[in-house]
Length: 254
Image 1: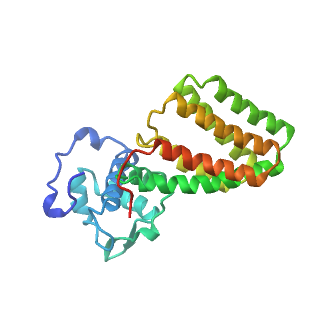
Image 2: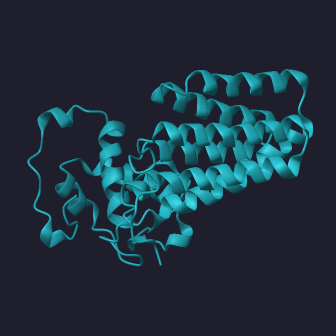
């Protein structure tokens, strides 16, 4: 994205095709670019966004699109709009980092992998708690479903894409059986966005698949035994260890 400062942002040539595009579709790109500018500190915390007419010229869209886009990023906690005073970028503590667009942009600009590091810690805590809950309330039918998910991992271990899908389904089954919908919803958001990042989905070796299969077996056996503490520990350790195996060497965040 080009510098959004007014003096550095010559108007784009207006596209007649864009003029026929629904406001909501045009706004998606504008929202993404504005969120990126804020997260990368191109527009720092505490500063004002350019006025509507300048943003309209910069993006080559109508003021209506700009107005709706600003409303969307206000809902994400990134800006505060004060009538008559303008739009100010809020501090990071106010951002809704679980918002899909905010999380996506954070991952896109995660040079140190600090966001993915944090994501692994949060996933480990939440999925560990859900594994413990599943171990404490399992039924025969639920155990059968979990065993079936694990067996699917065993049967697909020589096929990377199928194995990765089976791995995901095992996790989703544990989450579903936990009956903790808030934790499940948060974890699904984190996991789905992480899987879209090339830095998260580095190509593993067959040896790595066998390691992850063994880690899932420990989770399954703890749940089968009704051992909540062991299930939590096994799931948390698996998520953290699996990320460290995939993690590319980078300077870690301070």
